[in-house]
Length: 228
Picture 1: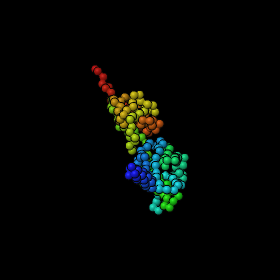
Picture 2 (picture 1 turned 180 degrees about the horizontal axis):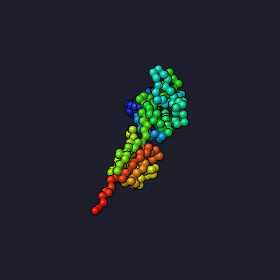
Picture 3 (picture 1 turned 60 degrees about the vertical axis):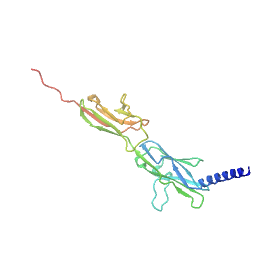
Picture 4 (picture 1 turned 90 degrees about the horizontal axis):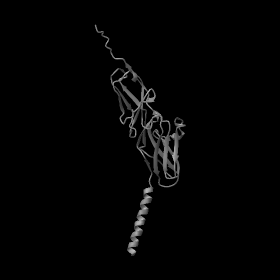
C-alpha cells in the first residue's frame, strides 16, 4: 500500500514538472500561415502565445524591420490609421483586424511581445503572409459578330477560401440563372441584345465585383442577293 502511494505521488510530481517546463518557453502560434483576401474586405489574423514568467507589458504586430532596428508597431503607423485594430484577451490570444484592405497591405505580418523580465521579448517568426487581390473579369473576345460564342472568366491573383459559386452581371444587374460553381461562363450564339458591360463576383462578396468589361456584338453578314 505504501509503495502504491509513493508511486502515485511520483506520478503527480512528474506531471507537475511537465506542466511547468511546458510553460517555461517563448512561443507564438498563428492560426493560419497564409491568407488570401479580397481588396476592400476585412481580414483577421489570430495568434496565441506563451512566455516563461513575469507580466507581458507590450504586444504588437509589425511587417518589417531593418537589421538592428526595433520593429515598428503597426498600431502607431499613420499608413494604417483608421483601418487597423488590436484585440487581446486574458487567455494569451491576440487578433489583428484590418478593414478596407488595399493591395499595399500584402505583406508578412509578425507578432511581438515584451515582458518585464531580463531578455523579455520575443517575435513569432515566420509570421502570417497576407495576399490582397481583386476580382478580375477576362473576356474573350470583346468584339464579335452575331451567333459567335464569348467566354467570361472570373479570376483572382491568389487562392481564396474555397469558392462554391460565382455571380455574373450585365450592366450592373445580375444575369438571371447565371450563378455557377465554375469561374467560367459562356455566352452562346450571341446577338446584338448581348452587347453591354459585364462583371463577376465571388459568393458572399457580391459587394466587391470585378471591374466591368464591355462586349460589342455587330451584325453578321446579310444575304442581300435579289431573286430575278
